[in-house]
Length: 294
Image (cartoon, rainbow, N blue to C red; front, side, top):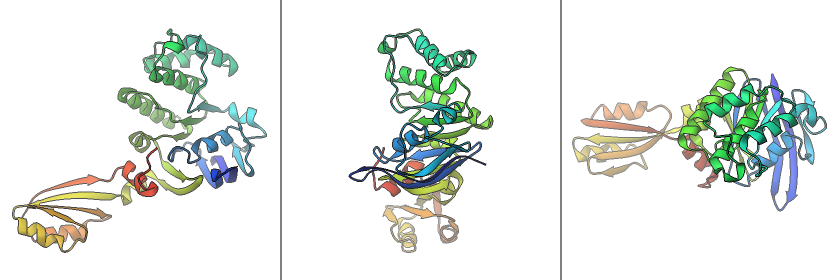
């Protein structure tokens, strides 16, 4: 069952800025990664999902409700972390969390305290004295404390150190086990690989790719470094693989898919060692975007 349905939405700000004829769905219990460079349309799409802005054309439904016309009902089902959080700097972390809990009509703060402990957040500090990472933890507590069935997270690990990024992945894996539906934009490719079932790639306001992590992993390029006992054998094998590079007795090449032909050729020679390095999600991303990282 599709929890989020986006059908042919366009929001045109002029000058080729906005999003254009975008369609996708997020299924019940699915974790969808949303990738794209800065200015590609991720945040504009998310703001339409939350009913903050209306689309020029197209429709968005969340749990069967119109995301703009029935925003108060749809947002009650959503835990949202914006890319930029508007804090009240004169409050402490726990005061701001309590303030937001009242806004969201959350009476029980047990979940918030559980998250504060898990994320090792000193919530007694004044927000204006907090680092970016500490403020991000406050934002995560607020997004997750209502235990909503749908999570929309815009750059959720921005400012977090590697340990906290790992803890965030564990939170998402737990949320997935609980059947929550999650859409998150991120430029941390490792966390996307570890948490998402499927990814969307957006460029210049248009979707350019949609595939499962499984398919991307299965079809991605592998980088081979093959060490021969004799340098002339590296040269001989290189003739079969255009684009391969010989350095002394080492042959390097990139192959996509099944390496059967490579293995068949190597069986005829004296191979000392083979190193295989799978293409990362970041490298796949850069193929689509021509080197533009987020």
